[in-house]
Length: 86
Image 1: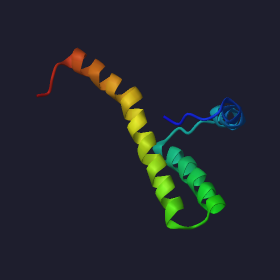
Image 2 (image 1 turned 90 degrees about the vertical axis):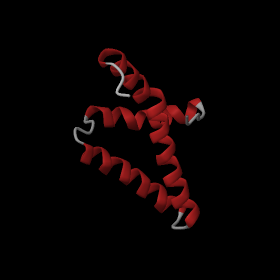
Image 3 (image 1 turned 90 degrees about the horizontal axis):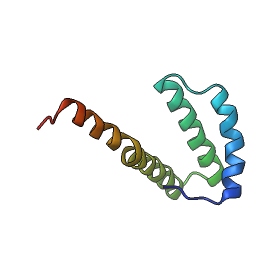
Image 4 (image 1 turned 45 degrees about the vertical axis):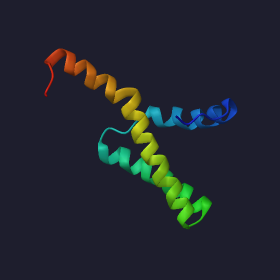
C-alpha cells in the first residue's frame, strides 16, 4: 500500500476531485489516464531502466493491492453465494 505523507495526499486529492467529476467510463479511458500518468512520470524522471522499472513495479503493486483489498473479498462473497468451483 502506498503510504505517503498527509500533506502529499492533500495535494493529490485536489487533482482526484477534478477527475471524479468526469471519471473514466470504460477500460480504455482508465488505461488512457493511467498511461498518461506513467508518461508524465517517465518524462519527469528520465528515460532509463530505473524509471521503467519503477513504473512497472508500481503498476504491479497496484494490481496486487487491488486484488488483496477488493477482489479477494468479492471472490469470497461469490464463492459463499454460489459454492466452490473445485
